[in-house]
Amino acid sequence: MKPVKVIALLFSLLVSFQANAVPEIPNPQLNDIAMVQPHPMYGAVIFYNPIICQQIGPACGFFRAHEYGHVVHHHQLMPPGAFAAAREAEADCWAASNGIPQEILAAYYLFVNGGSSSNFPVYGSPQQRANRVRQCAIQAGKWIGP
Image (cartoon, rainbow, N blue to C red; front, top):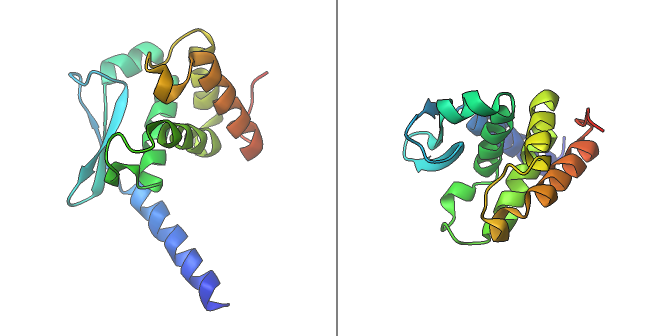
């Protein structure tokens, strides 16, 4: 195997391991569905609100996968305002490409029905976000919806 391919394979395994080693911590006081923060020991920690997750059901899995997308792309190491819209779109696409199809579909319907962040400059409108998630899931072969 060529050295470049070996390095690429090792990097891919490292990123995969890092994403899988990220602790998920429930926090009922969190004022969001989920968020990632840098952590000195784990690289990142994902916090999620179990109350909101219970309310939105399987869509919560998509949002947690979205946070893993930030980890895989090392967004938690960037300054908070840097390329915010591009980072969120990339994390959405990662979640739609790597998540569980039922959770992706649940998030799609949540967006179609108007659920999403009101921060349109960063996330886009709920319909734009639904379309982005659908297109990324179709490209990855994860789409099970209409």
